[in-house]
Amino acid sequence: MPDVTINLWTLILGAASGLAGVLGARAGNRYIMGAIFGSVTAAILTIARGYI
Image 1 (cartoon, rainbow, N blue to C red):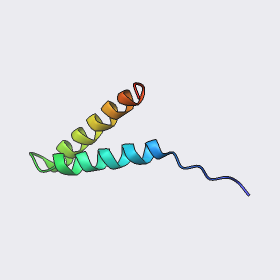
Image 2: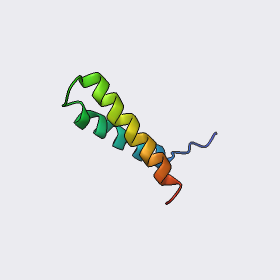
Image 3: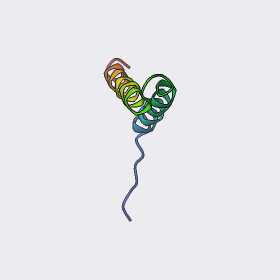
């Protein structure tokens, strides 16, 4: 039976990006602002992972 591995960093990154996207979607154009906030959060957390 194959092993299933869950990468917790991927879950944290997805949750934080989704939350930032939802919170950021309250201003301006919802889709664009949500995408910008989510992608910026993902980029920052990916860079921060190298320092942790």
